[in-house]
Image (cartoon, rainbow, N blue to C red; front, top):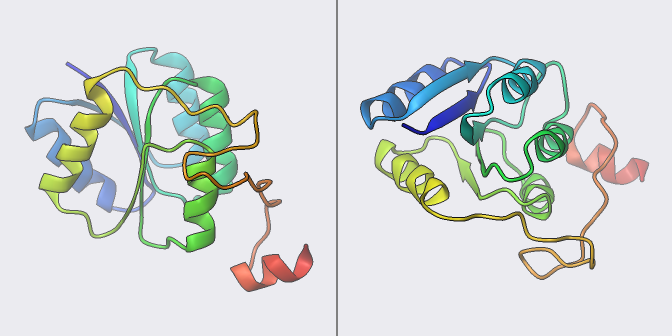
Length: 155
């Protein structure tokens, strides 16, 4: 049985967890980024992370970096209600397996999770300046509050 870590402070994580458990996955829930990182360190059986990008305790992009450092071979599926093109591009550059906008159908979530768990999966190497989408990687922006427009003005 494959173990999936579901990270979402939203009540939506319980429905994601129910969908996964009905299909035979073992689910572990975390309500924030720090709890998720602790789970990754203590549960070596975690084979997939399904996560939101909005946390009260950590920026979502920095969370993805921390997951990569903690569990480099574990695929990550981002399921978010507040996605932006900028966030999507940074997530792709960090090697997420899939980036999905809520609401997500149960059928689609199971299909993507099954594909992510099905075979050998490796994070694309970004050391040469390339990324899976073929664009040069951008540096991850500093943790800031405000809109994307505010972030661009501060650079």
